[in-house]
Length: 184
Image (cartoon, rainbow, N blue to C red; front, side):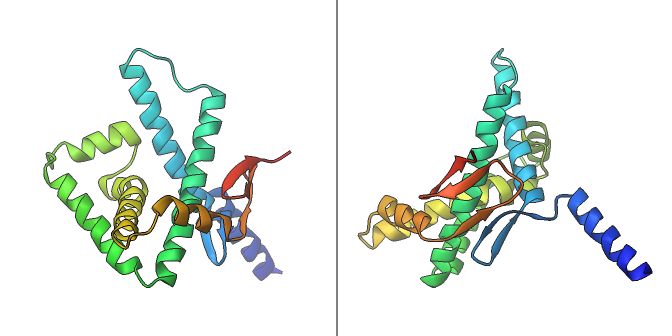
Protein backbone atom coordinates (compact mmCIF):
# COMPACT_ATOMS: atom_id res chain seq x y z
CA UNK A 1 0.00 0.00 0.00
CA UNK A 2 2.78 2.49 0.92
CA UNK A 3 4.64 1.79 -2.36
CA UNK A 4 1.50 2.70 -4.32
CA UNK A 5 1.13 5.95 -2.41
CA UNK A 6 4.82 6.70 -2.98
CA UNK A 7 4.46 6.16 -6.72
CA UNK A 8 1.38 8.38 -6.83
CA UNK A 9 3.23 11.09 -4.87
CA UNK A 10 6.17 10.98 -7.31
CA UNK A 11 3.83 11.22 -10.31
CA UNK A 12 1.96 14.17 -8.77
CA UNK A 13 5.25 15.96 -8.07
CA UNK A 14 6.51 15.36 -11.62
CA UNK A 15 3.29 16.73 -13.08
CA UNK A 16 3.32 19.70 -10.71
CA UNK A 17 6.71 20.77 -12.08
CA UNK A 18 5.81 20.17 -15.73
CA UNK A 19 7.80 17.00 -16.23
CA UNK A 20 5.35 15.46 -18.67
CA UNK A 21 5.29 15.64 -22.46
CA UNK A 22 3.94 18.63 -24.33
CA UNK A 23 4.85 16.91 -27.60
CA UNK A 24 6.18 13.57 -28.74
CA UNK A 25 8.08 13.38 -32.03
CA UNK A 26 9.00 9.78 -32.71
CA UNK A 27 10.93 8.85 -29.58
CA UNK A 28 11.90 12.43 -28.76
CA UNK A 29 9.96 14.29 -26.08
CA UNK A 30 9.47 18.00 -25.53
CA UNK A 31 8.69 18.38 -21.86
CA UNK A 32 5.94 20.79 -20.90
CA UNK A 33 8.41 22.36 -18.44
CA UNK A 34 10.86 23.17 -21.26
CA UNK A 35 8.10 24.48 -23.51
CA UNK A 36 6.64 26.60 -20.72
CA UNK A 37 10.03 28.00 -19.66
CA UNK A 38 10.91 28.98 -23.23
CA UNK A 39 7.47 30.47 -23.86
CA UNK A 40 7.63 32.48 -20.62
CA UNK A 41 11.10 33.77 -21.53
CA UNK A 42 9.93 34.99 -24.93
CA UNK A 43 6.75 36.42 -23.43
CA UNK A 44 8.86 38.36 -20.92
CA UNK A 45 11.10 39.61 -23.74
CA UNK A 46 8.11 40.75 -25.80
CA UNK A 47 6.49 42.49 -22.81
CA UNK A 48 9.77 44.19 -21.86
CA UNK A 49 10.26 45.36 -25.45
CA UNK A 50 6.70 46.65 -25.74
CA UNK A 51 6.95 48.44 -22.39
CA UNK A 52 10.23 50.11 -23.42
CA UNK A 53 8.51 51.34 -26.58
CA UNK A 54 5.59 52.71 -24.55
CA UNK A 55 3.22 49.89 -25.46
CA UNK A 56 0.99 47.67 -23.40
CA UNK A 57 1.68 44.05 -22.40
CA UNK A 58 0.78 41.20 -24.73
CA UNK A 59 -2.92 40.46 -24.99
CA UNK A 60 -4.24 36.98 -24.20
CA UNK A 61 -4.52 36.32 -27.94
CA UNK A 62 -0.92 37.43 -28.53
CA UNK A 63 0.29 35.22 -25.67
CA UNK A 64 -1.56 32.25 -27.16
CA UNK A 65 -0.05 32.92 -30.61
CA UNK A 66 3.42 33.28 -29.07
CA UNK A 67 3.07 30.00 -27.15
CA UNK A 68 1.88 28.23 -30.30
CA UNK A 69 4.85 29.62 -32.24
CA UNK A 70 7.28 28.56 -29.51
CA UNK A 71 6.01 24.96 -29.48
CA UNK A 72 5.94 24.83 -33.27
CA UNK A 73 9.57 25.99 -33.39
CA UNK A 74 10.59 23.51 -30.70
CA UNK A 75 8.96 20.68 -32.66
CA UNK A 76 10.63 21.85 -35.87
CA UNK A 77 14.00 21.90 -34.09
CA UNK A 78 13.54 18.31 -32.91
CA UNK A 79 12.51 17.20 -36.41
CA UNK A 80 15.55 18.90 -37.94
CA UNK A 81 17.80 17.34 -35.28
CA UNK A 82 16.36 13.94 -36.24
CA UNK A 83 17.15 14.73 -39.90
CA UNK A 84 20.72 15.70 -39.01
CA UNK A 85 21.18 12.50 -37.03
CA UNK A 86 19.92 10.41 -39.97
CA UNK A 87 22.36 12.26 -42.22
CA UNK A 88 25.18 11.89 -39.65
CA UNK A 89 25.70 15.67 -39.58
CA UNK A 90 24.30 16.63 -36.16
CA UNK A 91 27.64 16.74 -34.32
CA UNK A 92 29.23 18.92 -36.99
CA UNK A 93 26.32 21.37 -37.15
CA UNK A 94 25.95 21.49 -33.35
CA UNK A 95 29.67 22.30 -33.07
CA UNK A 96 29.29 25.05 -35.70
CA UNK A 97 26.26 26.44 -33.82
CA UNK A 98 28.14 26.52 -30.50
CA UNK A 99 31.09 28.27 -32.18
CA UNK A 100 28.74 30.84 -33.72
CA UNK A 101 27.18 31.54 -30.31
CA UNK A 102 30.58 31.79 -28.62
CA UNK A 103 31.78 34.18 -31.30
CA UNK A 104 28.68 36.36 -31.00
CA UNK A 105 28.86 36.45 -27.21
CA UNK A 106 32.60 37.16 -27.15
CA UNK A 107 31.92 40.76 -28.11
CA UNK A 108 29.43 41.25 -25.25
CA UNK A 109 30.30 42.57 -21.83
CA UNK A 110 30.62 39.51 -19.59
CA UNK A 111 29.53 41.51 -16.56
CA UNK A 112 26.27 42.76 -18.11
CA UNK A 113 25.24 39.62 -20.00
CA UNK A 114 23.76 37.80 -16.96
CA UNK A 115 21.81 40.91 -15.97
CA UNK A 116 20.56 41.43 -19.51
CA UNK A 117 19.42 37.84 -20.06
CA UNK A 118 17.68 37.87 -16.69
CA UNK A 119 15.96 41.21 -17.25
CA UNK A 120 14.94 40.57 -20.86
CA UNK A 121 14.18 36.83 -20.75
CA UNK A 122 14.13 35.80 -17.10
CA UNK A 123 16.86 33.27 -17.89
CA UNK A 124 20.44 32.70 -16.82
CA UNK A 125 23.12 32.87 -19.50
CA UNK A 126 23.34 29.08 -19.94
CA UNK A 127 19.57 28.66 -20.35
CA UNK A 128 19.47 31.67 -22.68
CA UNK A 129 22.13 30.11 -24.89
CA UNK A 130 20.46 26.67 -24.88
CA UNK A 131 16.80 27.65 -25.19
CA UNK A 132 16.96 30.84 -27.26
CA UNK A 133 20.24 31.03 -29.20
CA UNK A 134 21.17 27.39 -29.91
CA UNK A 135 18.07 26.31 -31.87
CA UNK A 136 18.43 29.23 -34.29
CA UNK A 137 22.21 28.84 -34.59
CA UNK A 138 21.77 25.11 -35.28
CA UNK A 139 19.21 25.86 -37.98
CA UNK A 140 21.57 28.45 -39.50
CA UNK A 141 24.41 25.89 -39.54
CA UNK A 142 22.12 23.33 -41.18
CA UNK A 143 21.01 25.90 -43.78
CA UNK A 144 24.63 26.68 -44.68
CA UNK A 145 25.49 23.00 -45.00
CA UNK A 146 22.47 22.18 -47.16
CA UNK A 147 22.95 25.19 -49.43
CA UNK A 148 26.68 24.43 -49.71
CA UNK A 149 25.64 21.02 -51.10
CA UNK A 150 23.52 22.82 -53.71
CA UNK A 151 20.19 21.82 -52.18
CA UNK A 152 17.19 23.98 -51.32
CA UNK A 153 16.91 24.42 -47.54
CA UNK A 154 13.24 25.47 -47.55
CA UNK A 155 12.24 22.42 -49.60
CA UNK A 156 14.07 20.03 -47.30
CA UNK A 157 12.61 21.63 -44.16
CA UNK A 158 9.10 21.58 -45.61
CA UNK A 159 9.44 17.91 -46.53
CA UNK A 160 10.93 16.97 -43.14
CA UNK A 161 8.22 18.79 -41.18
CA UNK A 162 5.53 16.78 -42.97
CA UNK A 163 7.12 13.36 -42.38
CA UNK A 164 6.95 12.54 -38.70
CA UNK A 165 4.02 11.73 -36.55
CA UNK A 166 3.85 14.40 -33.89
CA UNK A 167 1.57 14.00 -30.90
CA UNK A 168 0.75 16.89 -28.61
CA UNK A 169 -0.48 16.76 -25.02
CA UNK A 170 -2.10 19.32 -22.71
CA UNK A 171 -1.91 22.06 -25.34
CA UNK A 172 -4.75 23.38 -27.52
CA UNK A 173 -3.05 22.45 -30.82
CA UNK A 174 -2.19 19.41 -32.88
CA UNK A 175 0.36 18.84 -35.64
CA UNK A 176 -0.88 18.76 -39.22
CA UNK A 177 1.08 19.14 -42.46
CA UNK A 178 4.14 20.56 -40.76
CA UNK A 179 2.37 23.09 -38.51
CA UNK A 180 0.39 23.34 -35.30
CA UNK A 181 -3.32 23.92 -35.80
CA UNK A 182 -6.01 24.66 -33.24
CA UNK A 183 -7.91 21.72 -31.81
CA UNK A 184 -11.61 21.98 -32.48
